[in-house]
Image 1 (tube, rainbow, N blue to C red):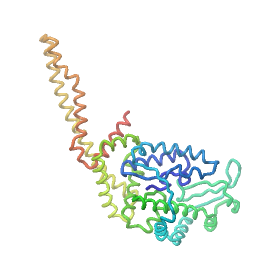
Image 2 (image 1 turned 120 degrees about the horizontal axis):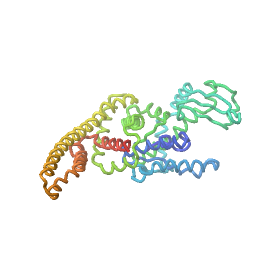
Image 3 (image 1 turned 60 degrees about the vertical axis):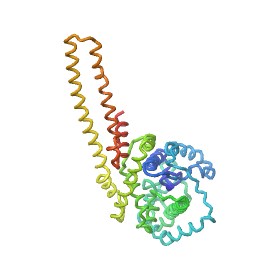
Image 4 (image 1 turned 180 degrees about the vertical axis):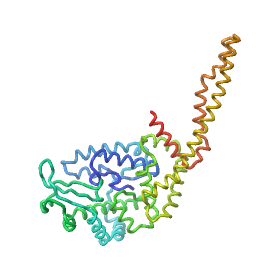
Length: 379
C-alpha cells in the first residue's frame, strides 16, 4: 500500500504535472519490478468534494498522471483503491495506531521541525500581496509558497521567529496531515494484508521512532532507495518491463526471492538504511552478477564470430576455385548458404542469451531488462 505522497496524490505532493508524472512513473516501475500488487489511492475518489475553482485542473492533472500508470494497472501490478473506511468497524485499528503515535511523540516531532524550518513573509512580485515562504523538509522539494492565507496579516514582513513559526501552525498542520494519511493507509494495509510504503519524511520519522526493529519497514526503505535513488533501471518504457516480466516469470521469481534474501542480510547488519549503504549493496551484490552475464555474452559473440570468419574463408576459397574451374551455376548455388550465415549467427547468439546457463543466474531478469535499455538507447 503506497502513501498519498508516494503516489503524487493531489494535495499531498508537488502539484506540477511533470513532477507528478515523474514520481508515479518511478512508482509504477517499482511496483512492476518487485510487488505482486501495489495498492494506491483512487485519484478520483475525492473529486466531487473539491473546490469548484480547482476541480477542473485537478481532474485533468489526475488523468495525465493515471495515464502513465496505465500499463501497470492493465497488467494488475497496480490497483486503485478507495479509502472509505467505516470508523465503527475499524475502531480497534484506529486505537492501535493512536496508541503507537501518542500526542507526546507528535509534539516532539513538531519541535524538531520548527527548529529546522525557516518561514518568512514576503510580497509577491506581481500583485504585491503578502505571502508565506516556507523552507522545511516536510514539504516536497524542501520549500513552498503559500498565497492567500489570512494568517499572513498577523505577521510583519521578514523572517519569523521559532515562536512565530509555531503560532503560524503550518508545521503542526503538515504533521497532522501526514499522521492522518498514515493512519488510514496503515489500517487499510492491515485490512487487505499488505505492507505500507511511503516517502513522506514525517511518516518515516514516526515509523522509525517506534519500529526500528521492523524488518518489513527497513526492507521497504532499502527497496525505495534501490529503485528510486540508485536506480537499477532508468529510461526503460514501462510497457517493456511488463512484457519482460510476463515472458520471464521464473527468472523474475528467482530475482525477487534473491533480492529479498540479500536485503534481509543487509538490514540485519545495519540499524539504519542510508542511501550510501544501498548504493554499496548494488555495486557489491547486484552489478557484479549483471557484469558476469555481460562477459559471458561478449565471449560467446567473440567465439561465434571467429568460427563464422573461418567458415566464410573456407566458402570463399571453394567459390573461387569453382569459378576458376568453370563449375556449373547449380554447383556454385550450393554455396549460397553463406548468404544466411549472418542470420544463423544471430539466431545462435539469441538462443545463447536464452540458454539455461544464463537463466540460472538469479539476476538474469535484471540483466535482461538492462539489455532492453541498451537496445532502446541504440535506436
